[in-house]
Image 1 (cartoon, rainbow, N blue to C red):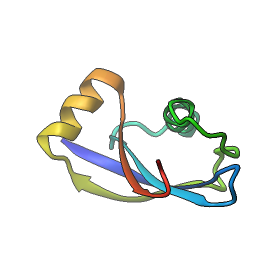
Image 2 (cartoon, rainbow, N blue to C red; image 1 turned 90 degrees about the vertical axis):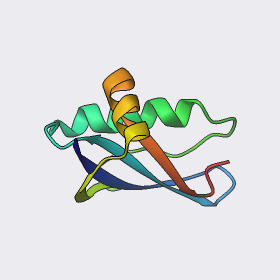
Image 3 (tube, rainbow, N blue to C red; image 1 turned 120 degrees about the vertical axis):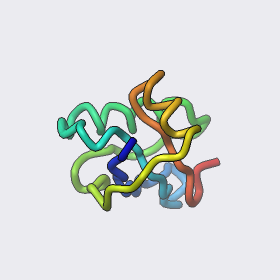
Image 4 (cartoon, one colour; image 1 turned 30 degrees about the horizontal axis):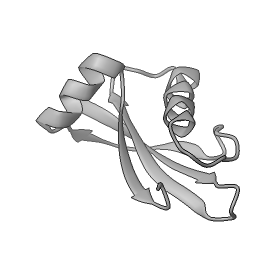
Length: 87
């Protein structure tokens, strides 16, 4: 499966910036759906964050997905790769 990687940066209440990728099927093009996946992920965090809009989240590239990513996308619709300040 090919996936679209959405590069995302969201401010935390402590001033740090979270950096994570939202991976979705490359067939999914509805930005609002992709942003909602990111918002659902942010709700799982113990700290508060800023908003997630097109200013914070942009399509970066398309790549071939690994098994773990495909499984998550088939079950939830998305997969998150945490990069910086996500915990």
